[in-house]
Amino acid sequence: MIAYYKDYKIEIWEQTPNKKMDFDNNDPNDTYGTHGYKVFSPQGEQIHFDNKDTWDEDACYQNACQEIDADLERIKNDTA
Image (cartoon, one colour):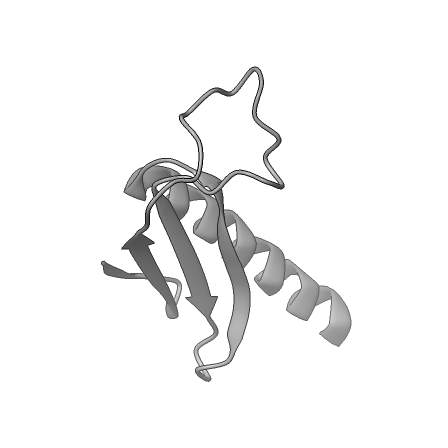
């Protein structure tokens, strides 16, 4: 799936999880969920990648939007 948010591109894909979903017992740093995503700046530069502990497209999209907002805030602070 390809999505866009504030001129940033978000690529979301399905993958094979390495564990069953168990938020109480899985280590999020060692658990591959059913989905992953990448975020690209308007210039085409990859600024974020996450393929761990995400279990649906909407979670990926919401996380990607947070990464984009953080990147825009960083840019704003760097130019202030």
